[in-house]
Length: 174
Image 1 (cartoon, rainbow, N blue to C red):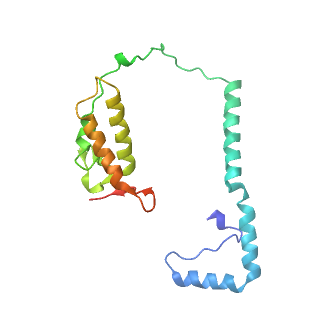
Image 2 (image 1 turned 90 degrees about the vertical axis):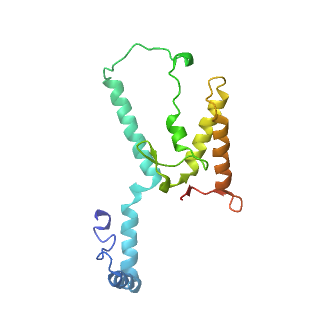
Image 3 (image 1 turned 180 degrees about the horizontal axis):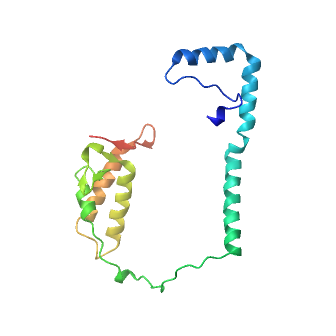
């Protein structure tokens, strides 16, 4: 509401088309008032344009950075342990398998149960394709069927691509 204070805008009752029409006609009929309102709104919002907002963020980051340089905090430091790939736990793919059907990977689940009415999303199937390919590329540890899953996800993405617009459809619902 403060954006519209000081005659930078007009408030009308919610869901009242007649009030909206009345104020619109009033502003269209009174060019001086309309332009004065536009000018006040323009001047008030100059600090809200992207360049200025970005500058404000950078100023905040710089202030925090400089404050941390002047007053460093004590931080907890655990012994740095090297993570070797051969010491990582085995990848568990139960949920991935559960969420994948003949179409692709379902977008949402309710706990561990696929929520089929929510449908399938292009971005989830693209991420699942990346996982399936990485699993296959990982070599001998690749679970059986990861290549089959990759084919399903890729087929879904192929279906999601609209060659006319050269874009992907985002979501498919059942």
